[in-house]
Structure formats: C-alpha cells, structure tokens
Amino acid sequence: MKKNKHSLLVIGVLVCVCLIVYVFFPKPACSLSSFDKRAIWFSYSDLAKFSYESQKAFTKDFQAAIDRVEKYKINTVIVQVRPFSDALYQSKLFPISQVICQKTSLSFDPLKEMTKIAHQKGLMIEAWVNPYRISLNQTTYQQFMSQSPKSAWLKDTKLTIGYEPFKYILNPASQEVRDYIVAGVKEIVENYAIDGIHFDDYFYIEGTHEKTTKNQRLDNVNTLISDVYQCIKAINKDVTFGISPQGNYENCINEGADVDTWLKEEGYVDYVMPQIYWSDQYGESQTKMFSQRAKQFAGLKRCQDVALYAGLALYRAGDEYDVDQGWKLADDNISQQVQILSLNGYKGFGLFNYSSLSKKAAIKEMDELLRVHPYNS
Image (cartoon, rainbow, N blue to C red):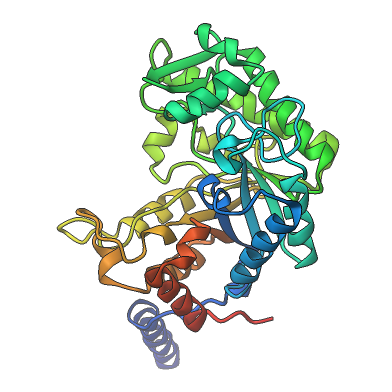
C-alpha cells in the first residue's frame, strides 16, 4: 500500500512539474519550413510600379521582385490580376487593366511571364481575382465604362450595386453575374499554368446590403464559391482555390463570407486565409487582439482537407495607429505572430504586401522572423 502511495505521489509531482514547464517556460520557436504556405501578396498597386513598356522591361522588374522575396523563404506569390473587373493577362472577357499598366493593350502577357519566372525559381503562383469589385473611384469607374464589355450593366440594379459615387460591385444575387465570374476563372485556369486561384475579402461590402438578409447574402456568395470550386477542379484538380476573408469573424458572416461552411464542408475551397491584421498591443488595454482572432478562427470546425492559413499585416510595420500601437512599439510582431500561428495549428501565412519590403521597419520585422524562425531545409 505504501509503495502504491509513493508511486502516486511521484506521478503527481511529475504532472505538476510538466504543467509548470508548459505554462511558464517558452515554447521552442517553430521553423519556417514547418509551414506549407509562405506567401506574399502582390497587389495591383505593387504591380503598377513595374514597367509595361516591353516584355523585357517587365520581366526584369518582376525577376528582381522574386529575387527579393526569395531571401525571406517565400514559396508562393499571389498576384492581383483582376482588381476592378479587368485583367492583367490576355482576356476575351475583361479589358486590360489600365489601373495597373496605364495602357489599353499590351504586346506581351504579364501573367504568362510572371508564371514562367515564378516556376523557374521553384515558387508557386496564384492568380488573385477580386470577383465582384467594379470600381472604387472615378478612375476605375471610367475604366469600366469605357473599356468593359459589360459597361451597360451599371444601369441594371439586378446586375450591379452602386453604394457611393463611382463605387460599384457586381450583384452577387445574379446568376448572369455568377456565370461571368466563373467564366473568367475558367479562362485563367485553362490558359495559364498557375497553381491556384485566390479570392480576397471583397463580398457584400458595407453599403451593399440593402434588400437582402444575412442568409440571402451567405447563400448568394456560397453559390458562386461552389461553382468556382467545381469549375477549377473539372479542369485541373491540382489547382487550388483559396479565399482570404476579413479577420473579423462577425464582419465575414454579415458580408456573405461564410467561413464556417467553407472550412467545415467539402466542395467550396482548399484553404481559408483570414486577414488577421492586428498586433497584440491593441488599444489602451493592450489587448492581445491578434492572438484572440487567431484562436477564434482556429477554433472553428474544419474539414480535414481544408487548410487554415493567416494573412499578416507586414504593411503596418513601423506605422503609428491610434488604436493599435503594437506596430510602432515592436519590431518582432510578425515573428511573434508566426509562433502563435504554429501553436494554434495554422499551416501557413501570407504577408501583405510586396511593397512593404521597401520599408525599413518591415525589413526589420522580416530579418527578425528569419533570425527567430530559421528555415530548416
């Protein structure tokens, strides 16, 4: 009996010691190589800084960009090829993006060149499509009116929704709109050796909810997402389809981004990458906002075949925000966030955005990321 009591005491002590170590001692830093996806977004404003005067000039610029991101062990580039119902590729459905290249026609195909360069470097490339957005200002509005074959749609509220002067989206409730978006995705997947199609967080944005219920918005967007997924897989099952919704769960649901369904059911997406763009020093109370949001998404029910990644706000590095001082007070936000993602079971991350790598504060963040989380090949 005494022997049994002694054994129980020893076990109890060991359990207590393990708990103390777990709670009070820091966990070993994860390696960058433990993440399947280490991506960076090339937004339309990033791509607009490249030269479109010739194929040679463009490839030189994009090659330099790839050389820069390689330094930070990035393995995926996400390039915004349709920001405003336009195209940074040769399309029969959408006009060339004047917003990006300042031209109405090109002598070469940027997406073809970007795909070739990325693959030569061993990187994956995803075509980033904004499915619904038409315009955000007078410039993008005029581009749609003068160049788009669908310009007449702006007169039909069943096909488009205007919510402020010069601001329009395609109406997610329209089957004709859904068919148009799916056809655009099909055109890319059939004609380019891309590794994935990527949607961002632009669905029923604020100001476009009139005459719809929350459930109607969710259903309308889900119909499109399912159709896009089926279209992609029918052409090439190896091409992935992922979405990067807002990092605010409640906003996602309100705007038609049904992250619950996308994560837990097959037939919608291959991955979800919420944009968790906060630090852990948020507000006067220094709320651990990033950690809270990361845990919230990690806690959602998830299908085994759907991966969970996170979008990180590299662009905020060094900037001073009234309510989110962490980006100004620390230069290891990204490093800490990657560790938090690892502890919460995330399999990858994306950095917004490429141009941030020109900022000294962002470079410090990335150097710290490499120092703390070295890549183990």
